[in-house]
Image 1 (cartoon, rainbow, N blue to C red):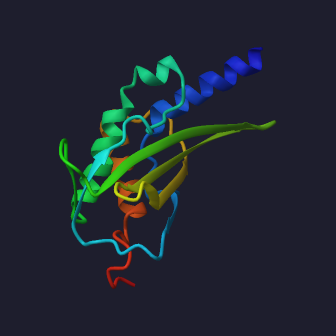
Image 2 (cartoon, rainbow, N blue to C red):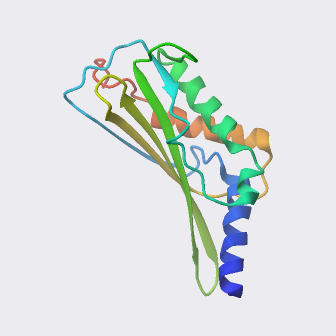
Length: 167
């Protein structure tokens, strides 16, 4: 029982610091449907029901949802995809965040995994998935967390939208 509490506390402390993993050790990967023609400009809305954060009241108190959505929206806007509050968007966007902790004899490591999912609103089919994973850094400010999260999304979205003649 003590080990579970320790793991939960370590996970929460790690998440407090994370929410941003950046270019210093962030691993990213992307997969998309090669049969989909992604336009250079499009609209999206957030599928808030599909967004997932770890179920912990302490994490909920951090108010991470606006931080994640703002960082992703800003990076997508730089690439011609803008968020709309009403009307019929071209895509629906959501995220999923998870934290995993490993405890060893000499140290422990916590890693955050963040997925960004783009669903074609007309086809109701996932057409693009970005994934970032990084070790969590404890003790950073919310501003630093925001900066690191933006950097992670910038890396993840580096070649977005696909099929635009980029190498």
